Amino acid sequence: MNLLSCLLPDATHVRLETWSLEPAQSVITLTLHARQRTAHCPLCGRRSKRVHSRYERTLADLPWGEYAVTVRLSIRRLFCDDARCERRIFAERLPGVAAPWARKTPRLIGRLTAVGLALGGVAGVRLGRKIGLACNRNTLLRLVRRAPLPDVVTPSVLGVDDWALRKRHTYGTVLVDLERHRPVALLPDREAPTLAAWLRGHPGVAVISRDRSGAYAKGARDGAPAAVQVADRFHLLQNLAEALEVVFTAHAKDLRAAEQGRRDTVAAENGTLPVPPSVPQANARLLAAGRRERRLAAHGQVWHLRSVGWTGETIARHLGISRASVFRHLRHRAFPERGRRADAGHSLLDPWQHVVLEHWNSGRRDGRWLFRTLQQQEYRGSYATLARYLHRLRGVQGSVRAYELPGRPPPVLAAASRRVLTPRTATWLVLRRASNRSTEDQALLADLRGQTPDLEEAVGLAEEFTALVRDHAPDRLDPWLKRAADGAVQQLRRFAKRLSADYDAVRAALTLAWSNGPVEGQINRLKTLKRQMYGRANLDLLERRFLLAA
Ligand SMILES: [Zn+2]
Image (cartoon, rainbow, N blue to C red; front, top):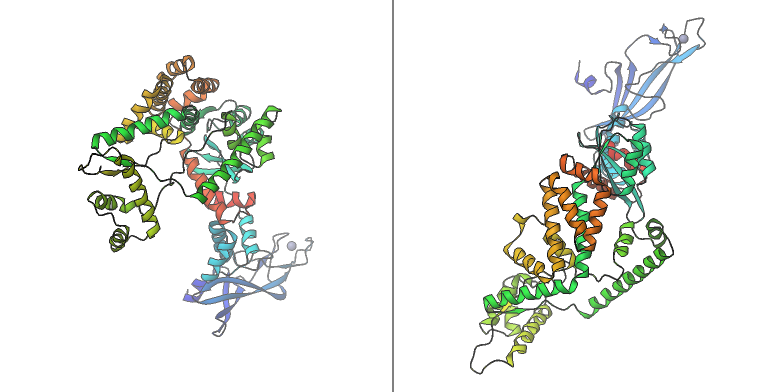
C-alpha cells in the first residue's frame, strides 16, 4: 500500500485513478474509482459486472496540509441481469466515500459534526475556517441536528433539576444519570405531567433525587410510583436559608445592633477609633433609589394580584419576573429593604488604606503629599478618591475633638471591618461550617444570638438542622422537627411543616448518599452551551449538543 492510498477515504473500496494539484488555488483533485469489478444490485442482491455507463460525483474531503481536497468519484451504472428483478439498471454504492445525496465525504461530515457539537453554529464556522473545514452556519447546524442521539440506558438513579432556558421566562428540566454522571434528557418545561410522561416512557428508575418543588414530587409519584424519592441536601439547606433570611429580615434592627456592638467592642479592645464605611455618592444613591422604587412597585403588584386570587405562576408571567422573585415578594407582607451590595464601598484606595492611616496617625496629613507618596507605590486611583477618604478621616477626628483635653494626642484611627450584617450575610454566617468560621465570625454570631430569644432559638435550630443534614443523621430528624414545630419562630415552624409534608424524601436525603451535585455540574455545562448559542438556542439543537458533546 502506498502513501497516497493510505490517505484516501475508504481505501479498501476505492482506488486512486488520477490526481491534479493547483498550487494557485491550493486545491488537490482526486479521481477515484471503485476497486471491485462487480457490484450488487440493491434490489435483488445479484452480482453484476456489465457496465451501462458512468457518471461522476464531486465531494469535499478532509484537507491535506494546506490543500483543500476535492474528490471526483466515478460511479458506474450497471445492468441487473436477473430477469425477475424489476430494476434494469442500478448505480454502484460506495457508502464509505459518498452517502446518497451527500456532497461531503463521511469523514469530513464527522469532523464538522464534532465541531458543531462542541462550538455551535457561529463559533464553529469561525474555527472551521481557520482549520480548513470551511462550512456555513446552516450546514453546520443541520449536521448537528442529524447526528444520531446516543442510546439512552434508562438510569436507575436519576437526578432532576430545573434550569433557565430564558431566565425569568422559560424554564426546562435536566435529567442526569447520577451513577454514570451523564446527561439523559432535557425536558421543555418543569411541570409534573412532563416528568411523569418521561418516567413512564423509561421504566426502571429506582431512585429519583430532586429539589423540593411540589411539581417534581408529583411528577415522580405519578410516573414512577415505585421509585424512592430523595430530597436533594443542597436544596434542603437552601430552603432553610430562605426561611432564616425571612427571620433575619424581620429582625433587621437587631442585626444592626449586633454589628454596631461588635464594632464598638473591637474598637474598645484596641483603643482605636474606627473609620465608618463610606456613604455612596449622590448619583449612585439616585440610581439605587430608582431600583428601590421599581422593586417597591413590583412588590405591591405581586401582593395585589395574589389578593385577587392569581397563582404565583400567572403573576410571574404577567409581570415578566421569575417565579422565584414572586415567591420572594410573597414571603414578606412588608416591603423588604435590600442589603448593601457585596462590593459597595469598595474603592481603588482599599489596598492603601492602612498606609494612609499609618501616615495620618503619625501626623502626615497633607493630601498632595500623600497622593504623591501613594503614586510612587503604584496607586492608580484619582486624587479625588484619596481626598474623599481624608475628608472622612477628618470627620471622625473632628467628632471627638470636642472631648479632647488640650495637650493630649489625637485618637488613633483604624479601618473598620468591612462586613455588613445583612439578612443574607447573617444567614450564610449561620450555615457556614463551624470549622470555616473565623474568630470574628464566631464573636459576631454569639452577639447575634444574644440579641433576642427568637434569634437565639432560630440560630440554634438552624445550626442543628445544618449539622444533621451534613452528618447524615436521620435519627436526629424527628426530634428536630418536633422542636421546630413547637418553637416560637413562625418561619421555622412553617419550614418544619413543609419538611414533614415531604417526610419520606427528606429522610431519604439523610440515609442515602445520592445528591444532585452532578446535576449542578451538567447545568453549568448547559449554561455554557446556551451562551455560545447567543440566546437563539432552539431546544432540539441545545439538547443534541448537551447529550452528544458530553
Ligand atoms: Zn436486481
